[in-house]
Image (spheres, rainbow, N blue to C red):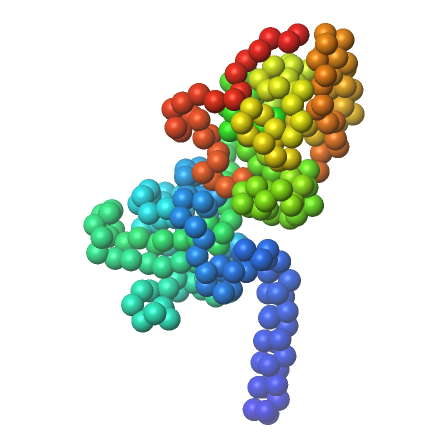
Length: 310
């Protein structure tokens, strides 16, 4: 009877393990380097370092909840920092170096980073120093917001360094959010260094979420053509390379028609427009330090000044 019972337990364990594996995320090489091989991402480069939205931070590998946004603070160290974990969500063990304390996901064992105490940075006197790549974020569910638009639309523009394009387009009334990133290439989950190698085919681009009842795509596109030089091939001002090309990645047939109409108007005015018009593909958000760059720095774009063309 005991042998049979142990056999049942063994089978249940196999079933549970198989079910758990179904929920495990397929990791990119960079995620595997950090989460499985216990590596560390570069400081100030992570998606969640300069990030303050309300919600829950989950394990990137298995989805288990790990930290609350209320427990996040800016330690100035270059990585997301929390002074408290969700109870029983994080395991602490002595690091391989015999000095630091490693923190891992209790559920799947994913490497998160390290925990430090005694630094007096918060009242809890604890700092969980976590790699952004080990986390995923789930925003807090909010009550129905009557001010939110019933529908939104996405537009993707590439016109040189994404810092300046993001800054200019975000100023338009009706634009809800602008995010810098990479699109139009072959490599999955590219980094800034990958794109700068000129081997991925990606362009630095911005993803614009807007309310079409307040601002039209045509208005966005006109401004896009007036804040960069659409006649320069593979560059904008001093920024040279295929990642700085001029391109509109349309998300609807109407966006394609409007873009081609505007290019036609510019050519009639004598502009030798080289802007490509391409169907939108996957957009990869850029590293956190690229987002809202000029707003955070408090300066103006150096190569995206306004020139009236329409």
